[in-house]
Amino acid sequence: MSARLFALSVALLASVGCAGSPQTKQEMEALKAYTSQLEKENADLRKYRQAYESLKQEMDFTGTEAKMLEDLRTALLEALKGIKIDSGDVQYDPKTGKYTMAADLLFDSGSFRITAKGEEVLKKFAETFKAKPVTLRIVGHTDRDPIAKANTKQALHFDHNMELGALRACSVFMTLSKHGVAQGRMFVESWGNNHPVVANDNRSDHKRKNRRVEIFLLTEGGAPPRR
Image (cartoon, rainbow, N blue to C red; front, top):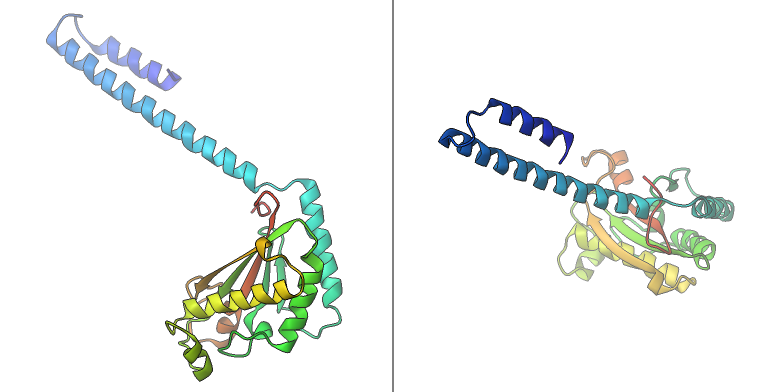
């Protein structure tokens, strides 16, 4: 029994009357019920703490893994030097192990076909990561504008940004696969326009930031870098 429960029990016992009185029996039953409730709550808290510790251990990178990812980042930046891209087109967040690529770099407006420059960038990405012990989680994001391009609308089943985000993620998947990344080390998902990084409004600069493909690096154990 915890110190809190013991102190509570002593206080309640000190306040009751004779051991055999109806009032005492009623108070003892109440104490027993309350003690049982607190013990259950303590057990639940221990369970949640164990789950938290387990998740924390999963999420923590070793120094070796962190160094590997930093070396890969450096190698990719070196490989991309020969490609003329804007400074914000490819960004890396070491806290989440995430590369963010602007959709305008990879695709024409309203399309899910990889552009020539996008192909070049993804080829360099594949060459950097294809032989490394990482899995790639590829996530497609769009702005909130409805799809207007006729060819894209005809190719969609649902005419929805969620589907466009998925097709863009799949296009990145297939391009990386073509350049040597094993398909079994990649998976795709889409958030459509449901997870913006800035206000999901009509400002053109906000739309550009929200249109993106994110590639998360996962280690062999499936854990991203610590957040």
